[in-house]
Image (cartoon, rainbow, N blue to C red; front, side, top):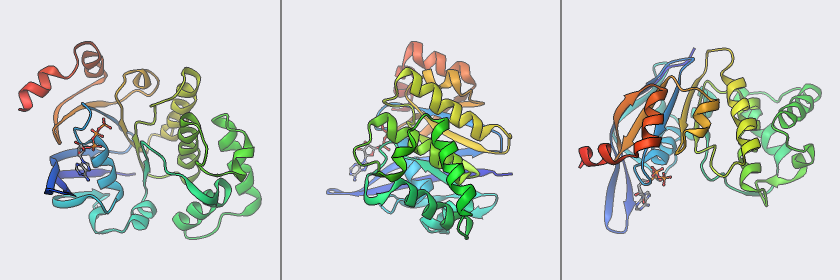
Length: 252
Ligand SMILES: Nc1ncnc2c1ncn2[C@@H]1O[C@H](COP(=O)(O)OP(=O)(O)OP(=O)(O)O)[C@@H](O)[C@H]1O
């Protein structure tokens, strides 16, 4: 069971001209089994929300709260957030030179579980997870994301999701740059994660395409640092047809 609750979250970043507020009072509750999609114009603060939940030091929370099953997420270090069950698939997964995929996954799993996974089952689990997203197992010996294509990076995120098995997954534009087959493969990975009905998913996306494979329970429109509308999957179709105009003009 997992409930992620975000209340009146305000976040700023430091710029050359001083602090700039990006999140201006975000409210969102994700209960177990729920998938929430966030859609919004470029620069509205969607990735900032994802990074703030994950604890990126660049984003300074000035007020509001984030709790996971009642525990204060904002008081936790990045590691503690991961151990508590939060997972972030980044819009731009970073390269980690000198660290192989296999070492990275094992280290992450060990850190999250508090003990090293049993070697024999672990190798099998990694191979199965890679196989499911049609990633050649040769990737296990390559350095994390180094020279990976955009789509390979996103598949690798899904491998991590499957192996680390968090309570709540925040997926920031996991669909961007995916070809048609890869989009299906990645969506199937997310749906497998959701399968038992006890996981929360926050899906940040620009396109309704992925929402045809991963059905959201709620769609939120995000404009200028806050949620301005909430609806069901039909809201995504409306956005696709009409764009953000009516929300943007209402927000200014
Ligand atoms: N260090 C910084 N200095 C100035 N502005 C910043 C800084 N970091 C973030 N921003 C601004 O914060 C805003 C929100 O950025 P964010 O990446 O969260 O938007 P987004 O909704 O995810 O956009 P996209 O859909 O294009 O990915 C942008 O206008 C961005 O330029």
